Length: 169
Image (cartoon, rainbow, N blue to C red; front, side, top):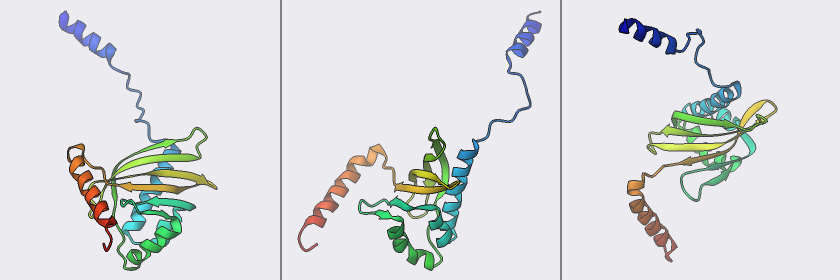
């Protein structure tokens, strides 16, 4: 009798199998993901026109160096030689979080990236909907620094800045 009672309790406490599949990302989130994935593929394929078509006209790109704050056109001028050689960069997202504004016209995201040249990196940014198409308005590429090595990295940055400020350097 105790086995039958345990079996009944187990069956009664299990969630019903409705046959429904786990919910997929909302359509707007899926569209944002598609834009970002295609943008990364365009760089990996050195497709300059496709890559820069994903930006708004007034987009800003923030690179890993403190001096790297570029408008879309400034960034394109800097990046053009890489695209022209047929080898830009290859950033592969391993995870991404996307949030949407209540009116569905603004999306912000952060993503973990595998990069051959920078190592583990992070991208974050903002997309806006322009005429039904998601466009990147801001992108920020960063290299997360583990807390355990932060003091060493900070000291190296400070030494670098101090040497840069010396006359004749």
